[in-house]
Length: 172
Image 1: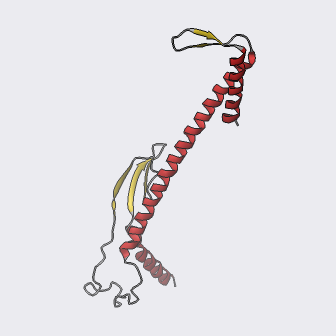
Image 2: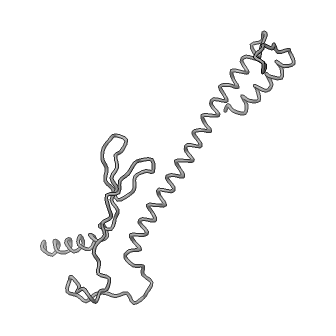
Image 3: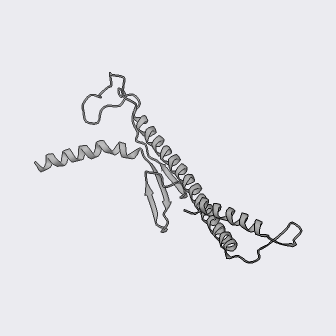
């Protein structure tokens, strides 16, 4: 019974070997400096090196090469199954699609971070301006010639209203 189990296990491993051998192998270093190997491409922001693609040697014509197990070769008469290379192509397509999605997600995250930074900076500036207009006293600005110009009551009230609108717009 144990010998039969070992033979079944050996047959399963042998039948799975060609499927595993078709994967492209990637090598990269993660953020901790550890070298990683995988058949799945690393994130797009990581420098990777393709070690190579292992493909099993499959005879193109089953009538030329005898079957390894002594049984006659099985042929597909339905005509609907994809060739073995389609599995490799679909893995490559899936990896490329994942890489594109990761790149798009990275760009979206960068845009979101830039927008968040802009909103935070604008909020801080708007609150500073509002505090300046609210504190009262004389407020001056510098004109295009570099000369000081003091704001009147009208200009101060307009500036205060503008600063309040900016705080409402940029601050949550």
